[in-house]
Image 1 (tube, one colour):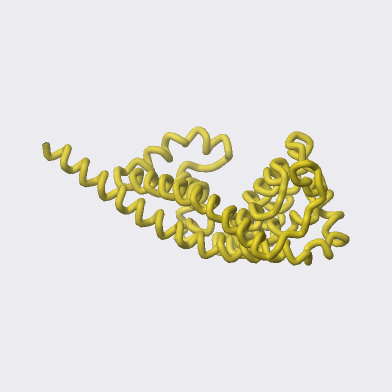
Image 2: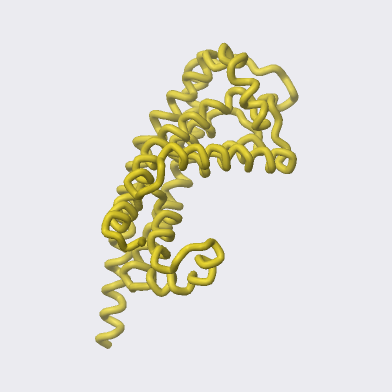
Length: 254
């Protein structure tokens, strides 16, 4: 009976902590996603981006993307994955184009913020950022023939030319797109952080790291950095940066 009671208490504590962290993380994401997505939608509606096509077309064409794709890529590289996604979903990209943009942002995001963390961890931030951007570009070049991306924006249904929408119509479209995105993010982050808190509460993280030992060795990593690797993979450098920097300064990674 005592064991069952303790188990239920741990379960409740883990779920409560996960939901609390999930809500906090969700609110933090919304502070990024809502303003950036609105800014992107208004910028696209204004037509300003099209005036820069002559500058962006060669580089974006090299990545098999339309010139407009530069905006979510730049926002993602300077801010975060969530900022890049927020900018991407309000623009009329095809599935293939969105796939390439998402892959690039996942590999090269928050370069300044994460570069600082990498620098404090003993890695040259500029070199690390260049490697990330270069790896993202090479990955897109390899993926482009397989995902059906093109350098032009897709036409609307019926292959009719795009009609410049009224301001309120643009706002309605932005609002509906953002609501759908935030609903998905809410359920995903709540489930993930609750699961992670349960792992932490029941002490399952370190056994999981030990189980991943062979996989870490394949990547050339020592098992003593397994927890840090998992921290970076699950939480990203932005969240796990403090732990990584502290471990590097303490000499535990030597």
